[in-house]
Image 1: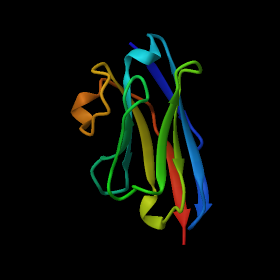
Image 2: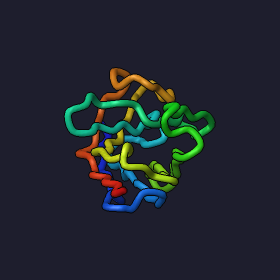
Image 3: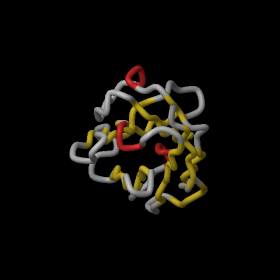
Image 4: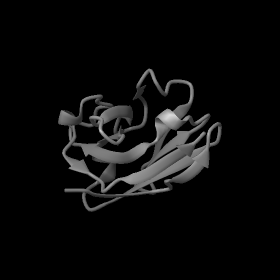
Length: 124
């Protein structure tokens, strides 16, 4: 089973950018589809973006399309989430997840392993 550690969260002003990283260890990273989810206080966890095992296909939520970009570097066992034009509504704990299907799945049920999360706070 792969282990995941997120980093890169923090406090940023509205309109700013952050890049989240998720480093994987353990099993072969390139076997897994990877996803980013987020959970704001009092809300359910929601899908943000996902990428297939090869990196050839990505999916993203409508709320982040055109602002967030998911990518991966299989040589570095890392998946990234570049977040641009952030708004206070993007404030949440962001989690990366690994799925053995290898798909760019949008459902949390398709993921087997989760990181511990990293806090992103966007001030207005």
